[in-house]
Image (tube, rainbow, N blue to C red; front, side, top):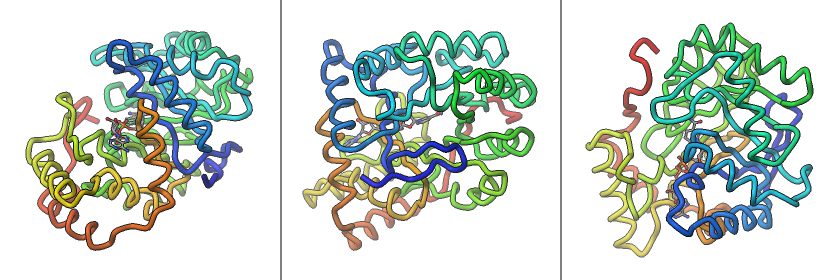
Length: 307
Ligand code: NAD
């Protein structure tokens, strides 16, 4: 597994990162498999783990913390988030995010976090994020509790608004560099000029770009999901997996320091790592792209309308 510097943070991350949001949605009795997925990732060279108190309303952090207990702390880079706690609960105040970091440290069983990110800033007041949240995180950085500070979200203008007003080490952009939507490519330089490293998340469009198809909670409009389902059916009919085409595309063409893919199943982790070293099927890629052409670069609204 290749490793790359995460911008100017001084951190080094594996080109494939472990997205822990599925650890917050484990089926009953699924915790052991979730923990096994984390251990499989570590064995295969994945060193970057991203989580949030929002995922499963603290469940993902708790499970990830259990999985990482006893693992050499210098063997992995740990990122979590602040500000979002449920589908409706957001609090970007300095007091809450400072307390949130302490709570995450407890659940994750560590005394420092390599990266802490303001989670889904489009649901908050962006000026509060600039004036209050990021400075609160910088204070924790000065205390040595945090290594780097980031922001995450879906609408690219909201991320740019923050990055252009407060120095931010990283952003997570999701579902914006995939087979369906590549809008992030046009924004990358804007972030780079500010010295902000871009982490690409959700290369499988949160499950929509898999043969199994999108989960019921997926926020994309029906037209996007219909085209993704057609691409999945095409791959299935060929004995291929759409997730493979999607992951290979994002990692090999994206040129991001790391790509975060979500998995809570050891077999999915193994397949994802294996696919990175296998050649792309260019003909299948072209056919899948044709299925997705009607919805190419279509985004959906997310967060406060003013953001
Ligand atoms: P994803 O595009 O990585 O897709 C994950 C889904 O694909 C899961 O349902 C998983 O079971 C399935 N999958 C994974 N490997 C597979 C395989 N080999 N075959 C078939 N299916 C497979 O979406 P994601 O999990 O939402 O995003 C990845 C990570 O990025 C998240 O876990 C999170 O850490 C981060 N993220 C952050 C934000 C944010 O900060 N706002 C938003 C989205 C994602």
